[in-house]
Amino acid sequence: MRALMLYLLITAPAAAQVAVPTASTAEAPICTDRPTKSNFACTVPKGLVQIEADGFNWLTSTAGGTRTDQLLFTNPTFKFGLTSSSDIELNWVPFTRLRSRDAAGRVSTLSGVGDVTLRFKQRLTAAEGAFQLAVLPFVKLPTARLGIGNGKVEGGIAVPINYSMPGGWTITLGPQLDVLADFDGQGRHAGLSGLVNIAKQFGAFTLYNEIWTSQNFDPSGTVRQYSYDVSLAWLPRPTLQFDIGANVGLNRNTPDLVAYVGISTRF
Image (cartoon, rainbow, N blue to C red; front, side):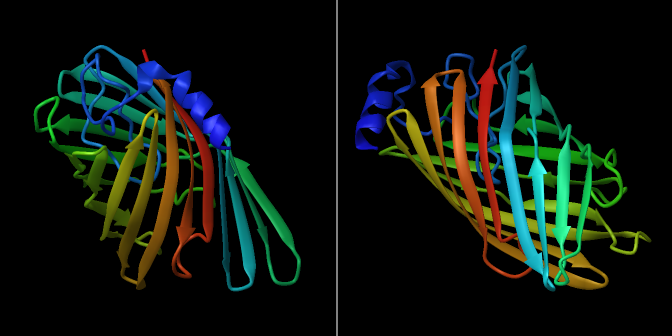
């Protein structure tokens, strides 16, 4: 493993960074909203296209004696730079499969397309700098069948905050307000989520550690989720990134494990 890491570092000199990528310029290394659940304040440079996708994503959870596994076959986000400080983004799962097994051993499956999420990111700070701030409103459109999605329009706004420090360290905060459909489908309620992400750059690699929480204030009862997320990203060249990671649930309301590999590119 040490020999492999050394080989990758030697063969990728163009991607050797002195800090985690956070800049929004065409000359800077690709800056993405993956891996982990965090968003970065950087935007896609004007006129350029960026694609960020899971190559494979597996989620497993157990509740009430029923185990549920969900597979996402890719999960691409397409981005286009509108101006030097803003971009528009579209996320869509082209195919997902749910498999549930209850305590009696009965198995059920459900498959189809996922929901569509449209996002707009406006960076509020300079293209390069230690402190980065953006606003990220979004809306989810119900294109998935019931059981995969809830059939409701939902939305919200995220505020990505990044601070880069000497030594290749970057701290990311991710407060987010959601407007969610009630579980009974009769109204709307608020949800809050947040995270603290600490990233460290090692040559062409970046290691991310993150604590995430979500508070869903549904009228039928508040659902609280917590997870620890860890991932590793590799830049073999400035416009290409590979990543691998896992999210570990910290309470019974959170999926036990989410594991994924991904790829991002800009052109």
